[in-house]
Length: 210
Image (cartoon, rainbow, N blue to C red; front, side):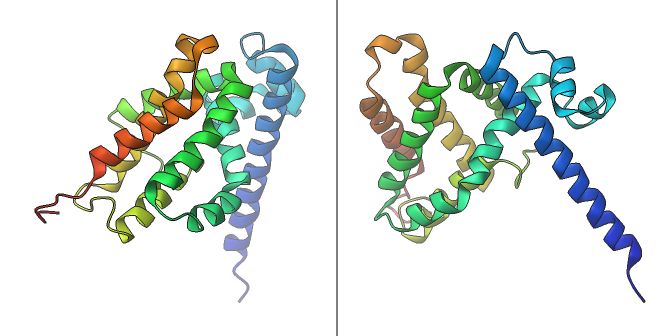
């Protein structure tokens, strides 16, 4: 017997994902064209050719679109980044690579990433569960942590969610000096400090209690 309901559900999911991607792509175009603050939800709906109700059913606020836009870009390059991570010798090198690429994004689109970082901070400090598979940034963090644990560089006695939260925190710390004093910003020094912060916080207990 042909499993019709399952096929229909799959098609529904594909259509839903296509609609979300179309909305995010339209928003990205408008953000680049006229700025984030000047772009309204109504304009995004028109650009994506969807009803306002459809837009709000996928994204209740502009901040949710911004987060999905950044995460979509992470996912689009996810496999390439994973391959590069696996070719690096240790956790510090992986942190420096990923934080460096993130800072390139911050410097090329400061307004977008400022709002994205604010959104991520609110999510991290909230009492609601994280989306474990939806965030491209957290997928990268989880792989850095997994490889570090396998190499004995990262402790294994803490929950993965806490370690991923810590990674997001050090990303914010790496980016903060850029927003506070962009003309004096030293990307290499900021990334190095943040990588060291993560490593100190996650270093296994030398006494073996880990």
